[in-house]
Length: 343
Ligand code: GLA
Image (tube, rainbow, N blue to C red; front, side, top):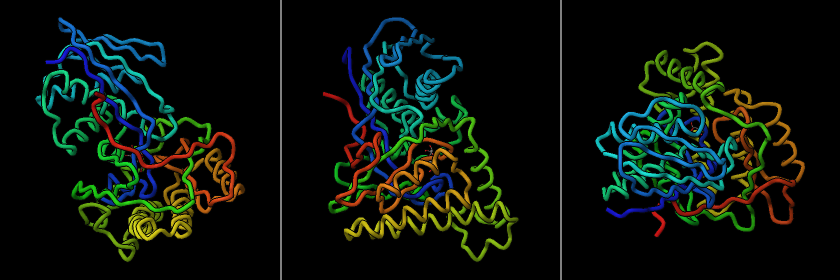
C-alpha cells in the first residue's frame, strides 16, 4: 500500500443530449482539461481528514460511518460511504482537494469530486479500479443519497471515459461509450457562464425527472427511449412537451454525431440552436439569465448556442465560427483525457 496517491477527474461538456441520460437515451459529451485533484495520504485511526484547498475549509468524519453534511462535504462523505457500501473498504486518509473547475457552472464539479475521491482511495488501498459503469454508479449514489440530486450518469461516464480529440457517444440504455474523432474545422466551442449558479437539489431538476418517469408510465413504455412522437397524444400537455424534448433530443444527438464525424460544424450549430429551443419551450429549464447569455453569444456570431447541463443557470455552450470573437468571460473548451491517477 503506497502512503500517498493523487487522482484527477475532469469536468465535462455536454455537446448535445440534455436530460436524456435518466431516460435511457443518448448524449454526445466530452471531458475537459479542468477538473478536481485529490491527494490521499494514509493516516492511522478511524477518521477521515479532508481539506478543500481552494475554499480554505476542512472536514473530519468517521471513515466507516460518515453522517450527512451540506455542500462539498456531502459529496466527499457520500463517496466514502458508497465505496464502503459497495464492498470497497476505503482506508482512513487525509484528503487534500484542489480544483480549477468553477462550481455551479454546469461542468460537473460534483461528479469530478466524487470520482477523484474514489479513485484516490481505491489506489491508496491498493485495490483495482472497478469497471467504469460500477464506479459511475457509486458516484451517482453519492449524489442521490447524500446531496439529494436525482442525476443520471452523464457526468460520471464523460469524466471517466474522456479522450483527447474525441467526443463520446454515450448510450444510457447499455452504458456503451464510443469515442468518435471530433472534426470542427476552424470552429471553436466556448462556454460562457450565465452568472446564475445552479444546484440540482433545489432547482426543478428532480421534478423534471419525475415528469419523465410519469410520461413513460402513462405511455406504458419502460423509458422514454422506447416512446415515439406518435405516442404523445396519450399525455396531458406538460408531460407531452417533456417527453417530446427527450425523444427529439435523442434524434438530434444522432444528427450531431454525423455532423462532427463528417466535419460539418454549420449543421452542428443548427442542432445546438434546436436543442436550446426544445430545452426552453418544451422542457422549460431555461431562465432569464440563460436567455440573455444565449443572446449575447448569438450577437457575437455563434453558429449555435444552448444551455448546457441541467439548466436553471450554469453555463451556455456555443460554437463560434472562425473570425468571430466570443464575449468577454467565455472559455474555449475541447475534448481532453478522462480521470486518471497522477504519477
Ligand atoms: C446534470 C446531471 C446529468 C444530466 C444533465 C442534463 O448535469 O448531473 O445527469 O441529467 O444535468 O442532461
